[in-house]
Length: 284
Image 1 (cartoon, one colour):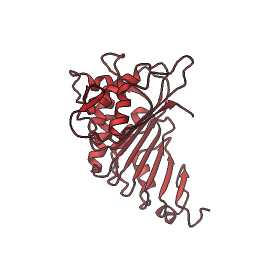
Image 2 (tube, rainbow, N blue to C red):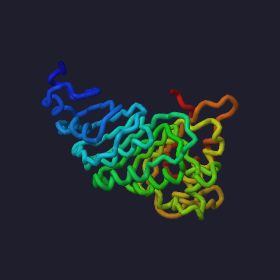
Image 3 (cartoon, one colour):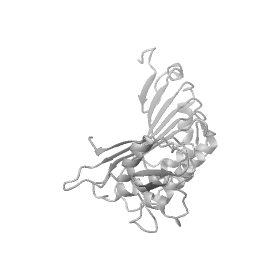
Image 4 (cartoon, one colour):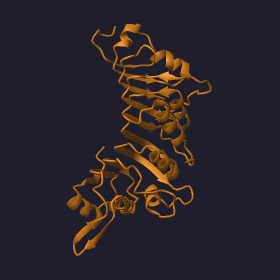
């Protein structure tokens, strides 16, 4: 029997009285099977829910039926072990108070990088009308086309915190071109200066040790947010101070040498702009 004071629950189904669910503020549901109507019925009594985790265990979600699932007070939504095409579950959810969206994929080996992200995420945000509250986006354990990831982030200009953990993103036109390369290329169609204009914290975690040029690409992106030229040893910056205040990069430990993740550009931003930079090996 669940204690009367409990506010958190992890469950496969719904064996508890409705009053139990009414007082929950945190809930984890295993969604190995089912349809949106099943999820709607499970969440309907959870009127005080603030944190919701849906674990798909790598299963494909049945989204053939249409259903709107209102989660009115949820601030943090986590999708775990998502089979890529199960991202369509976002087409049924509406979270008007959302602050953080955290998505981790079921990382099965695949050569198909054409995972949908922009359409389900941006459609979900638009339907939820949460642009005034939504500030943090975390993406984990997926390889995808850089253009799809950039289109997603470009459609979320109000984000202040972005975290990409073990995310591979290369261009659909050239696998050697990364998302940060695209941001600083003048003819790529992306505007680095207008990209994530409110960004305060950027986390790039578990970067493969083989990505030796990654540090250079990231530093070029940081510089593109607030270009500068050197007058002797002093930088002369263009425009006002950037919103970016924290940059964290962790890399998988290399057997020979780590990626080139520090640069004079980052040192300049640390010294003259107060950018906090944390770079080091992944400790997990």
